[in-house]
Image 1 (spheres, rainbow, N blue to C red):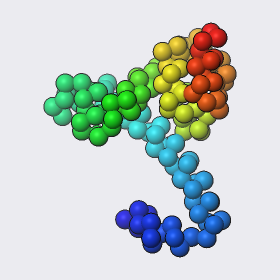
Image 2: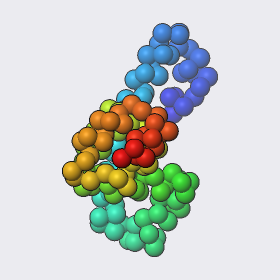
Image 3: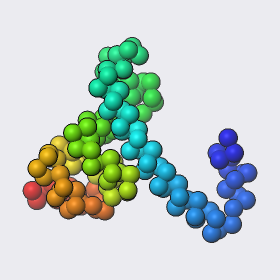
Length: 136
């Protein structure tokens, strides 16, 4: 609970401690995102959303997990693609591509072009990724 208490944790940190904790939290956030996508893919594989009473994975992610519809769609799309292209997990975890940029790229990724396209879009903004997609 203490980590969420702004007044007890954040305000007591000096500037360098705050920046160091912020930088460390980025790695944790990316790791959790990658794990979440792997779990989501497995929930779909096992059809656990149906066991939980939902008609689709989308309904489960929106209603049970509380994601917005657009966030749910992005995550489901990426989770599905990462099942067949597990390198996507590593790119997310390492912060080499954002979820939004990856969701734009997913429809174009396959086993033959994934390595080249990922390297081409690594570290690029969403609009830069859209340009790469249009170029191809």
